[in-house]
Each structure stands twice: as C-alpha cells, then as structure tokens.
Length: 113
Image 1 (cartoon, rainbow, N blue to C red):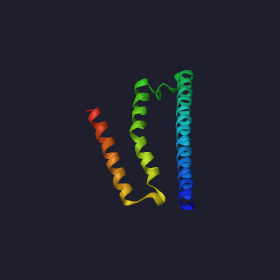
Image 2: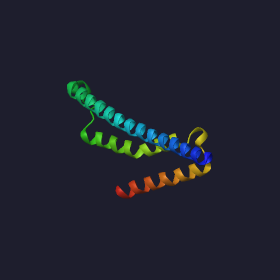
Image 3: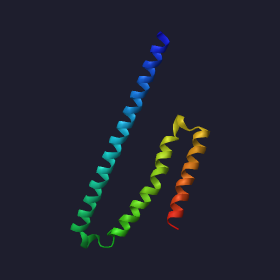
Image 4: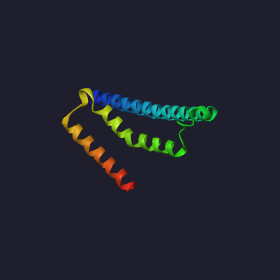
C-alpha cells in the first residue's frame, strides 16, 4: 500500500533526524567540556606564571569550585531559555519549564541546607 510505505519512509526520516540531533548534541557537549578544561588549565597556568602581579585577583581552589557550582546551577536556566525562545515560546512549554526550574532550585536548596 502506497500510504503505508510513505508512512514508513516518513518515520525512518524522522528517526534519522532524531539520531543526527542526538549525535550533534553529544559531540557538542564533548567539545564544550574539552574547551572548558582547556581554558581552565590555561587560566591556572597563567595565574601561576603571573602570581605576583595577580595575587589580589588570584582564584583559590575553593573559588574555582564555587564558580563550577554556579555554572552547574545556572546551566538549566540557559538551556530552558534556549528551548523557550522564539516560535517555541508556548504557554504549556513555559509552565513545564517553570516546574522543571522550580524542582532544580528546590533540589539544590535542600542539598545545600
């Protein structure tokens, strides 16, 4: 039947698009993490090399840890902003993302209490 075949072709194309999107997302995340590690190691090297000039602005390991925690806390806000901007800004999506952010905030608040 032509309609069944067309449906199968459409489903296969949709699956291929999802797999490609997932592959790009995984590669993006790997590249992002590699860049973060590279920049962090460069900043640490620079701080050690120019410690005398930078000692008033030097970041301690505890401060680096705090920055990492801030990044982890803020990352979902960035991601949800990306998901709900432009033509994707629907009321049901906004309400859902507000619930997700509230849960994220509550979990971190309880973990750090």
